[in-house]
Image 1 (cartoon, rainbow, N blue to C red):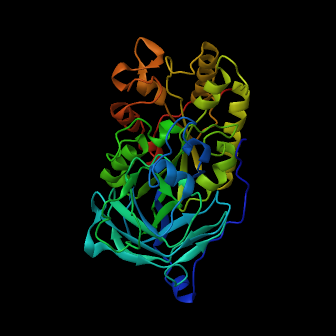
Image 2: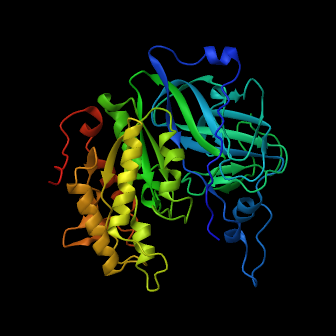
Image 3: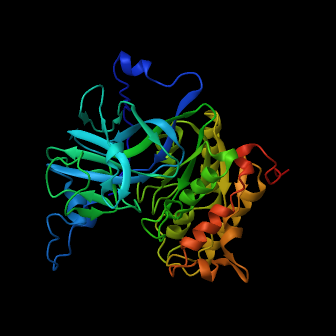
Length: 432
């Protein structure tokens, strides 16, 4: 059965009067320095085959299906822009029951699960040490003073005193998450003998108080945006590499990057996560400080539709229609849309010539329609010189679909920073 996200009330707890008075004023604003897109854990994927031994009680597969009970979860995120105060966002977007959080801490990461002790901060929620996250709800922590450098790894530690049930999750963290055997360890310098996974649980974002001219770019897409096949613990997705470029450039140092890619995601239909059409409001429009969104999605729609026994056909016109809707929604919120061409995939498991024709037509629309505020040509940056339908050999990790670390670097380098600074960036002319 296809899982669908049903819009629900989103609640932001901003706390008491003293908290409201502590909000940034004048020359500062809240901007996301990190965010991720969330899905409902697929319990069926965690079940062993009939003839296989069940996974251990603390295996990543069991955790994905069961959740936590009297355990501390320490998750690692990397900032993009700097700030002097921060807050975290917790989301139970796909949960069917309330989740009780006992305590929460944030600190600068030292190494593995260890933190820099002097940086440790206790987080509160409406002045209390914990909170209950109802189904569908987003909760903001109270702001806490912490000087957050750019492109720095933070450790967010959450303690769940009772059974949580299956978590709202992002399953491709590309950083280790450290889960205690048991107990409340949020303030501990490290997590002893942890179970290690590479998922985020209920953690949706980290925001910082930044300069008034700070703004956010949201990278919206599928596994190629999420960073699949990049080396874990090295920040080699193309959005992470772009964030490093922006931080190193004086003219763009106040521009944050939030990666809301989901591996296997599709534009028109649910699959891995809600469809792009269903999640655009939650994952893009709701991000604090968003000014730009990159759109690179559709290859999974094309691939699934062109398999040997297609059950969910798709046309170029349908994908273009969805793109136009994204543009209209973003423009209504004052957000500029950067169209990104789809990278080559000949040789991938779901490659078919008819799908390649759709990809080529969609890329032509992105380049030449003038519908987008700017265009980044990722296909040109990654295609083989002798065959535009294939990835360059040195960028191909072997699946012929996802770039490797070098390929992701080429994508990040292909991004013209003038798009974000108001300079003269190339933009295809509108069709007449």
